Image (tube, rainbow, N blue to C red):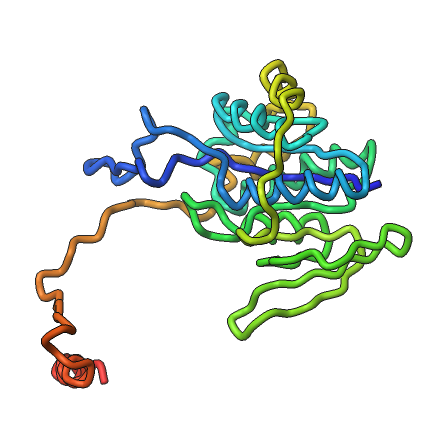
Amino acid sequence: MLNILVSIKQVPDTTNIRINPETGTLIREGVPSIINPYDVVALSLACYLKNQFGGSITVITMGPPQARLALKEAMEFGADRIILLTDRKFAGADTLATSYTLAETIKYLERENPFHLYLFGKQAIDGDTAQVGPGVAARLKVPVITYVTKIENIDLKEKIIILHRKTEKGVEIIKAKLPVLITCEKDLAKSPFVPLSEILKAVKSEPEIFAADGPVKFEREKLGLKGSPTQVKKVFTPELKKDTLIYDLSTTSIDEVVMKIIHILEEKKII
């Protein structure tokens, strides 16, 4: 049987993002929140693997109290245990502090039963760093395989997994020893059919709450803003440049357009 850990994040719906012009920060008030889409893929994969091999799924997230709703939704994917890390001391964490907090929580959970697979989305759509999954793997000292598009085979007896990962040049087929952490691409798994019993179970469920004071023994200086060496000072929407060129290809040939672009680049001494 497989013991699976899934890490998810609640993010603002990107179609509704607004930016405060004075502070340069995202306006989250009144903006609908969703489970990060790539994390939904990780949940879907966990559900599929649990149905195929048996076992259990533990889902964790770090965020404000409202993130409990994302965890309740995760129950619909067959999660057996949901844990919310929420505390003001976690606030303002960059990817380094976030990976530390998640990794220490996973180490605490593994005192009871080690995980075979750690599933993360390839990136969060609000930050787009793709750093948290690999950061957690480094702290757990387990192999990490990013941008996974297919699980070809899992041999629990030999503790071997064979999978495909997307690269700039094509697809790599990798054989690795369990345990392993993978980050999931969008095509890795489809959302499963959710029976009514799981929906009712999700409605009634509540996550376990982990705070900075326990049950995990965190090093306080590594949490939240205090433990974050990188900080975003400003977020803004780029202005459309006035010299933007638009060509009508129905009246202008591609060759003419290419030559005009080359001429402009030469004038600007870019080429």
